[in-house]
Image 1 (cartoon, rainbow, N blue to C red):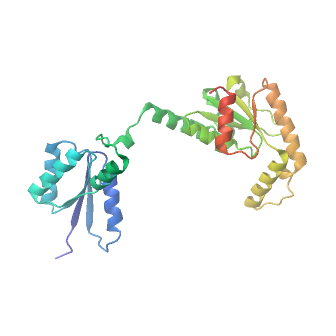
Image 2 (image 1 turned 135 degrees about the vertical axis):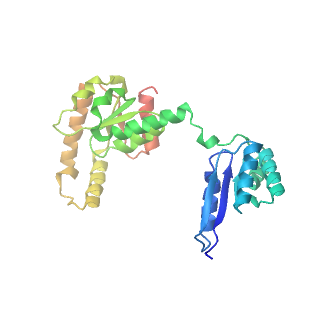
Length: 269
């Protein structure tokens, strides 16, 4: 006869992901390969509870379950006792301790973590838009942006864009390159959405030198020269003026969160 097969049911009134993860984590400590872990999600009424428990009994399985409601946990354990099925409540003890510690009763609604609100979808849409409009990409839908950042290389355009997108704003950023006209699609964007970024030139020299070192390139390259940087900054200021005097944010020595706040304040958001 071959090795027996062991069955474990991960039962939940939500997705069952937690029960599955706990089972997998525990099993890593055992040198047993012939184990089936079966997920049983959305078990919310006595009829389905009984069906799952009877199935587990038929397959000689044990159950790991996560119900957030105290009454459901009690009901499920009672049925398991009646059917002589071993069941482990992995959520209940934690919920009980938290109830005492926080002096508050928990919500009995399962899956709150996975409820997709309009805010969730708005943020996801903003992140997707921002990723597709990084560093001058996606020019054909540039007019759909909420915020458009401009600046020369290494002025925090990308990290700032991503941070703002997590706050629900669709952000595009355009690199300003010396002697290269900005894209004509910029004309389609409401001027009230434009923000220019600047930085102390000495600090930018340091940032670009660090960048060259990481790329394994010589520090003598024009990219990190003070003269080149001052020329680029002069060109950027010229573009800002041509666009109607857009607000300019100095990013020198500031955290992304601080810069983001200044950007939003400058645009009245």
